Length: 228
Length: 327
Image 1 (cartoon, helix red, strand yellow):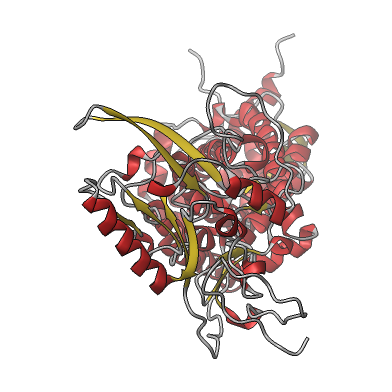
Image 2 (cartoon, rainbow over the protein chains, first blue to last red):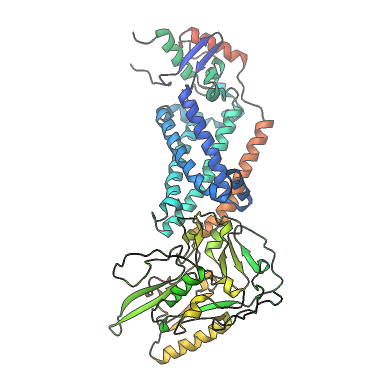
C-alpha cells in the first residue's frame, strides 16, 4: 500500500532538539523573492496607470515614459519566475479531501483553534487558494497584458478586443492585489511562517500545529531512511 | 506683441504681418486627462468646427500636403500597392488621410468614388481623453479643440483604446501619441487649419460651429435638390457632436465611406474600465490593505506554543507513528 505523499523530496528534518524542518531550499526561496519583488514593482507601476491619484508613483521609476516601458518587461520576468515556482509547487497544491473539512471549519481557522482542524499536508486549502489564484490571475494578466503592450504588440489585436483586454487586465490586477494582501497577511498572522521563505526552515512546533501530516511523513522518512 | 489674435471665423483669411499674441491659452482648457476638478475658464471661446463636404472633394490630397508642411512631419515613402491611399493608413507623421472607396450604388447601379478625409474628429466627449492615464497629456479647449500635450504623453496607447474612430498613432521613435491638432497653433493666432486653407474646392471649410452647421444645411439642401435624397450631416450625437464633421451624400450609410462608424460613442467597455472599475477597484484594494494592516497589529496572532514544540519532538522521535487519535 502506498502512502499519499505530503512532502517534497527535498523537505527534511534538520535537527531534533529542538526540531527544525527544512521547508524551502535556496533556489525556490531566491526565486520566490524575485516573484515578490517583481509583483510589488508591477503593483506600484500598474496602480499609477490605474488611478490618476496614484500617478505620482511613476516618479519611482523615473517618470511616466519609463514606467510605461518597464511595467510589461517586469511582467515577463514575473511570469517566467512564477512559472518556475509553479512547476515546483503544483503537485502538493492539488486539492485533497482534507481541504473540504478545513474549509467547512473556516471559523476555527480564523479563530486560531487549529486543534479542531484535520491534520494537513504541506499546504492547507487557504494556501492552495492563493497558489491557484495567483496562477490563474498571472496567466490572465500576461495574456491581456501582451494584447495591450503598445510598444511591441500594438497591432496584435483589434481595438474592440483591446478594450476588453485592458478592462480584464485592470480587474485581474485588482484581484491579484487582494490575493497578494491575503498572502502577506496570512504569512504575518501565522507566526513562524516568514522564516520558511527567509531561512528556509520552520520549527517543529509550527509544523506540528499547521502541517502535521507533512511533519509526520518527514519523521517517518527519517527513521526508515532512504532506500539504500 | 500688444494685440491678441482674434478668434478665427474662416480659414480663408491671411495672417497679419505684425506680431500677435496667442488667443488659445492654458486658461482656456476645459478638460484635462487624468485630472478632475479642472478650474473652469472665465471666458468661453466661440466653438469652432471644420466641415468636410465629401461631395465636393476631388481627392487631390492638397490637405495632406498642407498638413505635412505645416506640422513639419515626414511620412515615410511607401510602396504603391495599387490603391490611392497614400500613405496606406494614418501614421504618427500623417495626421489626415484621404480614404478612397469604390462603391456601387445598388439603386442606380452606378460606380461611385467616395473620398473621405479621415483624421481626428475633435469629439465634444473625447474617448482618448477619458482613457488617458497621464495627467495633462490630453486637453480640450473651450472652443472644442482636443489637443495632445506631448511632453506629458507616456506612450501607453490607452488613447487608441478609448478613441471611437481609430485615430491616434503612437510613434515608434519617441513613443508619444500623435493626431490632428485642428491646427491649434494656427487657430491660436486667428488662422484656420492648414488643410482647410489649402483645399482648392472648399470641400474643407472652417469657422464657428454655428456658421458651419448653417453652411452644411445649405449644402445638404443643394445635394437633395440634385437627387441625393439621403444627403445629410454627420455630427454624431453619441460623442456629443464633433468639431470636425461631414456632409455626406449618403448620410443614411456612413459605413460605406471606408467604415465611418454608424453611431460612434465611447465604448461601454472603456466607460466601465474608467468608471466603476477604477473607483470601486481602488476602494476595495484600499479597504483590504488598511484592514489587513489594522487587523495584523491588533488581532491575536496565530502562535505556536511550547507544548506543540514538545509534541513535535515526540512525534519526530517516534518516527511519525504516534497514536494519532491522542490529543
